[in-house]
Length: 402
Length: 124
Image (cartoon, rainbow over all chains, first blue to last red; front, side, top):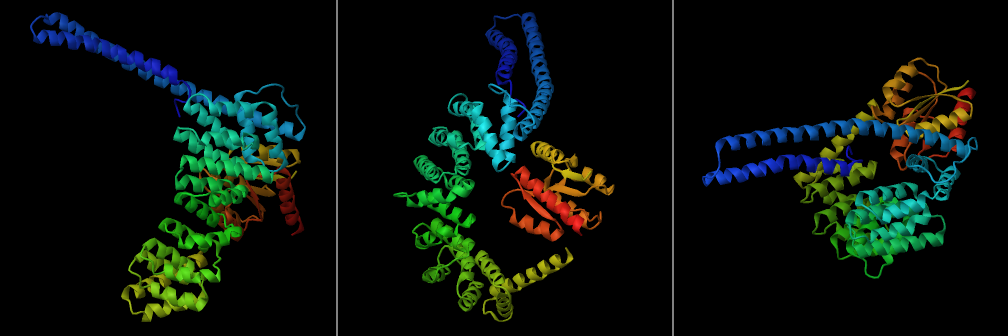
């Protein structure tokens, strides 16, 4: 970030330097071309050549001097700013504890940055008071304005600041940013909106915000990874967001997948039944996500046992992998038998997932692995069972030694 | 005066810790990394250690292990951890951490946990 400040100066200096080189070189080229057709004197060409070399040297010196000077000045500048921010943090802490008076009027940049840093660091009533200070001094309105207008880098800076501030009143500005045609702005706004949504306490406002954010993400067709990140960033508000994403009239497969993965990652048992229909979804990725969620939630209804058993024989490798992991939730006897069968799967990854699931079943699973290592009809199954048992021994040794 | 060593590299968190603990009457030393902390801990003059986990020169859990093993002090250690670090919390407790404070944190909660750790030590 060494050119964070001074883009315009750098552009001007660079243009001057290039001109210093380009003009004499252009003239030289023209004279040489004329010489080929027999109308130029050698001495004059020599002097032009010397001039071109001289101006190139001057240009390089100019650029080098600027870069070195800039490095020095910007390092000092950053240090000064960091010190001022630190002073402001101390001053704001004094304000929060009642030991110092609140500054009047609008705030300098470092004062706002200090408040944003405190908003990130503090929790509870102190954090709420920091939010009040940001709003009272007009910092939030200013950031919202900067997030909507100006250069892309300026807008991104403001969106990140709002993301750190997580002020509920700025939520709709951020949601509107998701509709931006610039994908950088759109994605940054979605992330910032999710973090802000996490701080919306009023349930009505939370549902309304979640609905608006889900609509914006669907309209913009944000990719799976971003939607999943947004769901996780929404923290406490993720339930509202997931509910809206899954209830959407015709949700895209990446959206459904992201919502289901969010259910699993955040261990939202409240959605355990909502996951079930997706275990038989037409899209392989969605089915895989549903099986993953079942494993992460640790809940498999009896009605879904057959679906998981069928998935163990699915044609798609990664479905069988997730099914093997979920199979540990089947009744123990059934799980032991089915996972032992999967130790002989044609895919190494499925064999490994089955072995890991058996390990997860405790002593009975380890005993089953022992039997498989000795008696399984498939050579690869025997190898995998033996390997899994060996790994357990080394894990035990490591745990004891540590 | 009760002495506390805070090992934390983030300048905002450092300032908040310093302000909060000094306001409550504690004598606080702040260091940004493990190597500085080792030197001060060797002097054995602290009643409590506040330890961040992600430090620029190593993992706080390694220092915690050394405090309990090599540095040999019975000093209470209060670990500062991020959200959703359940595994780290479990590992820290196994290594002998007395309590955890999750970042972002509330200053009153921090002071309550510090007071409890110090009280437990006095009660031992």
